[in-house]
Length: 559
Image (cartoon, rainbow, N blue to C red; front, side):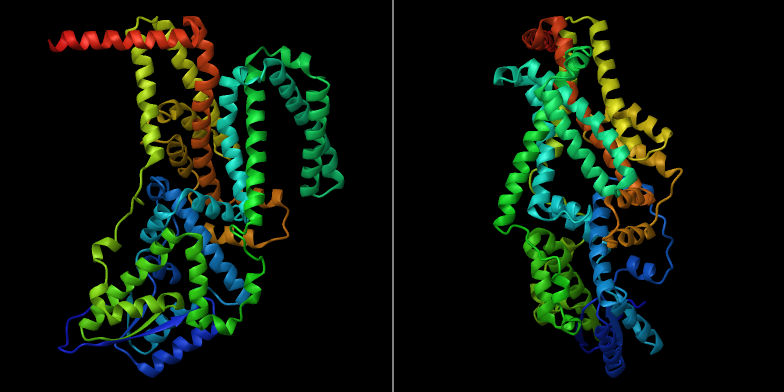
């Protein structure tokens, strides 16, 4: 590899060759151009990490700290999505993605020409790409990774489930004032119990005669019908539900209502948005491309613009910033007197050449490197801080109001158990080992009130002691997702056998479990304890009294 060199007293020149990363014609053009030009330097759109990975020089093991720190898990998801799209293009056009870049490197080395790696580090690009994307854009990206759910209906369904999880506990808290009575919640809970039992029986029987997907559909349909008619309509499970007391029907009934309402509204909104053309894409778009036309800059620019319409802010990190970064590198080589042939993706060519013609318009180098916060208000972090402050204030104010230590200890024990059970349960469901599951459950109470920590990090670190993950796992996931005929249940099962995917799911599910537990505790468990001290009104009165006592103590201390 070459450095930028020293000045030879003359200004060099740069020829930019725009290629398609999956076109065999691009490979031939690259080889012929370098042989004809015989430049001082061949610059390629690669960074050190990707180059060494292509050469097989780097170990595939991923550093645990890099994988689990902050949003790095989501950055890997974004990188996986981009890798998946490129690999599908490679399969369609029967050429290895990146073959044009490696052809440039191989040709330059055969001719004794220096090679310059002029692209920005891929981890920096992906981090900035993820940080710049909005919430809906991230949902579409992750949804697309999870079996192609990128259209409006899929996004509507995902948002509906999320809204339902929030709406369910709120119905449990304010339901009586909205006409959601306890008998109705009991009937709904009975319907859920019947639906689960019937669904399991039907699935067991249908699995023998039907395929996996058909058996799942049959079980879901039969269970829903039986639950609606037998449980909600006829009340066949009322006696069973009554034996569990009042808490279970309140929890199950309100969550079911919330999820049904959220999913219904989400699907309706998704269908309407889909008919309006939001996120529409033809499934056979790739069939419309002529492989020979892929080397044409205008065609690839259209593809780039389609991505820009999907995520304008993400496109700036993925396309525009890299244009400027690569142009900075090429200007430095040119100023050093080097004659350069630059091999870049066709979608980058126009932007790079614009900067080469007017280098004074290049943005400052410092603005193109390092991590990016994405701008805007970090609402989730702000909410996490408020939850932490509220949790500590709640216990402190009750203690200052003279509430018995035994009551506070039992309340804290309930918080510990609820958080631990949900975090550990979902971690185990995602495939975590028992040791990892236990660690996630034990720390969940603490991490759920600290926005700087997450129980999934701890679960993931323990899991990585037994299961190393590597970059090659991404290739395995791409192979699995490319099989469009594989039943969804089998596909999911095989994806969980890939260590990287299983680790990401374990981390995510542990965190989700803790979040759900915190919400359920505040809505369902806390009111039960509140009845011992006068209900919600009594809690409010005691917190006001605790605040008054704290203020008086502070005043006496400073005066």
